[in-house]
Image (cartoon, rainbow, N blue to C red; front, top):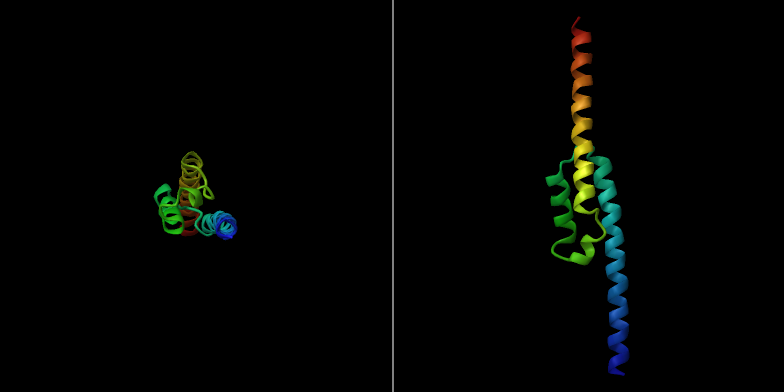
Length: 94
């Protein structure tokens, strides 16, 4: 009887962790969409806040390599958008 309760609790904890991991992945996608210029540090901070030290939950977030790529793309997007805004400002002033 003890082992049955233990096994049930173990399975329930596994389901809970999988649900939390899935929620982290979804929350990351929402954070990324609402922060198109987020830096690597901002992504890391978000993941740290959501997952804490739990390595399993962190598995719901992108790897460091992917985060670096996304952050690099965001930086390029920011530079491009800033350039477009400056051009528009110059054109409007003329």
